[in-house]
Image 1 (cartoon, helix red, strand yellow):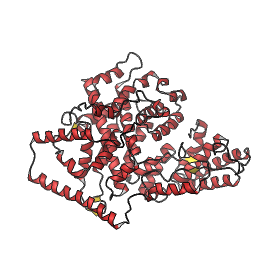
Image 2 (spheres, rainbow, N blue to C red):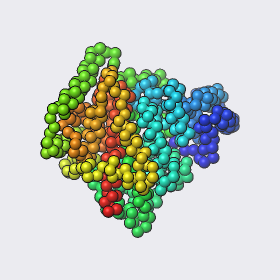
Image 3 (cartoon, rainbow, N blue to C red):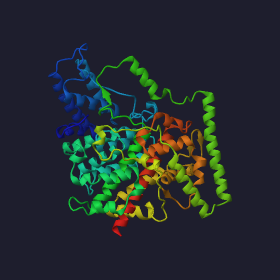
Image 4 (spheres, rainbow, N blue to C red):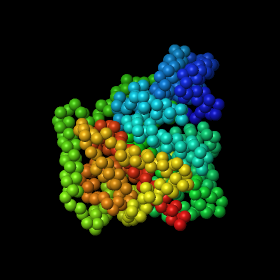
Length: 544
C-alpha cells in the first residue's frame, strides 16, 4: 500500500502546482532522491527475482509506484513525460520498475472509451487539474465520471468541502468515517484510498487495526452506519438521541449532520465504484506489480478489456439491440399519451406504489450467494452479517415514507444548511445535476426527451426504500425498466459488492458507456438522498 509519510508529502506537493517552474523544481528534487536511493542498491540480475517480484527497498518501491501513477494519470503533460523518463532511467540501471495491472480505470468499460487524460477539452482539463491539486492524484472514479464534466465538477466540489474545508469534524475523523462507510459494502478501493488519506492527515495507525481500537465516540457511530447502509427506514430519533446525549463522548448536532452526510456519501459512492467496475489506483495495492509480464496475461487483459463486450459490428446483434431502444422509446411515447388522456385516482396511484414496492422486494440481487467480508475490511465495522438480504427474506414490511410529509427540498435541505453551512446547497446542486443531466440522446437517437426515463429510475430507487411521491404513477416503472435493469439497479443500490460485469452488460445493451455511467450517477445520488431523508427526519424528530 502506498502510505506516504509527512516528509514525503512535500516531495509530491509541487507537482500539483499550475506553475510549470514549480513543477520542474519538484521533479528535479524527486529525480535526485530516486537516483540517490538507486545508487545504494545493487542491480538485480533478471535471472534472480526477489520473492515478491519487487525491489528489496520498500521506500523506493513506493516512490516508483507513485511515479508510475503520475506517468499515467497526472493532468500535466510535462510531469507525465518526466516521470516516464525517470522510470526508464531507473530501469536502464538494472532496477526492476512496476507496471500497471489491468487496463484502465474500469473493468467494465474499455480504456480507450474513457477520456484519456492527455486528450480532453479545456473545461475537463481544468477540472482534472483542480482535482489533482486538491488530492495529489486524479483517481479512477474521477476519470470515469469525466464522461460528464458538469456533474464531476459538482461532485468534486462537494467531496472536497466535506473532506478538507472547515467543518465540525476533524480531518482524520472524516477519513475514518469514510473508511467505516465504505467497509460496510466491502469496498476495498475506497477503504484503501482513505486509509492513505487518514494517515496523511495525522490519523493514529492504531485505529486501523479495527473499530474497537478507535475512540469510543467513533465506535458509537457503528449502529448508525449499519442501519443507514442497509435498512435506513428503521432509523428513529432514539438512534440520534444515543449519539447526542451520550454521558461521555457525546456528539453535537453539527457533528452528527457532518457524519451523516459522510456516511451516505460513501455508501452511495461504494455503489458507483462497484456499479462501474472501478479498478484499484495504480499506486495502491492491486494496481501495479513488479513481476515481468507474460504473453498469456496480455491476452487475458485484452479480452477482459472490452473485446467480449456486446459486438456492435455484428449486424444481427445490432438489429436486435436497436429494437430494444426503439421499443423503449415507443413505450415512453405511449405513456405520455396516456398521461394526457387520463389521470388515475389517488387510491389507484397509492395501490400502484404499494404493488411496485412489494415487487421490488422480490427482485433477486445478482448471484444469490454469501459475500463474506475479509478481515481486512470487516475490522472497520461491527456486525458483518447485518445486510439488506436478511430483511427482504423475512418478508418484513417497508413502511411508506411520504415525500409530501418530509422532503429534501422543504425540510432536509434547510436542516443541513443550518447546521453545516453551504453543504445543503452543494448537495442540492449535485442532486439536481444528476437528475436533470441530459444530452437528449438515447443510444444512436437524437433529440429525445429522456425526463420520463430519468424520473422512473430515480423514483424506482426511492420506491425500494419505501419513499412515495403522491403525484407519480408507479405503473410507469414496469413499462420502462425491464427485469435485467431492475436486477442491476437493486444489486447496485442494496448489495453493490455483488455487482458483476455480466449484469452491467445485460441491461441497455445498445446504449453508450457514457449513458450507463449516467445511470450509475442517478442510482448513486438517488440512494444518497433516500438515506439522507431517513437520517434527517430522525434528527428533526429528535429536535422537535
